[in-house]
Length: 125
Image (tube, rainbow, N blue to C red; front, side):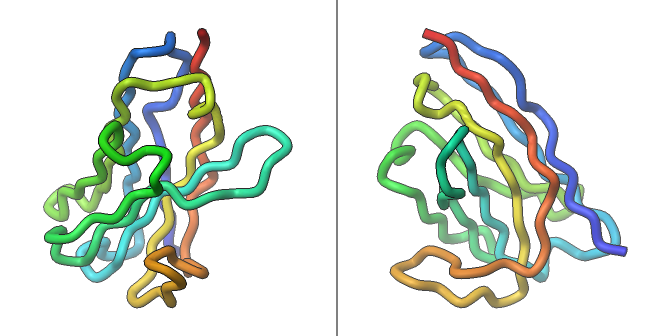
């Protein structure tokens, strides 16, 4: 059974930082493209970042570029999202997802095979 478990969410003041983790079990994450997505209250889920299988290339939504960093540690079967300079608009449930070869639309994964249940990030002003 494949499981992706996010952790590291919490409440932080604007300007602060958090690091989210996505630990995989039942699946070798090294074989997957990993993405982070988020869903704010009352809004649709949106793409945040993705990282290629090799970890060589990363892609970000314009709204987080320069503030967030996605990286992976395949030895730990875990991916991460380092979030700096957080702003209230970053408040959302953050989900990690994995897929061997996701279809991309404009660089954004159109669908991912496996999803975690999410971790809540709340940024206060």
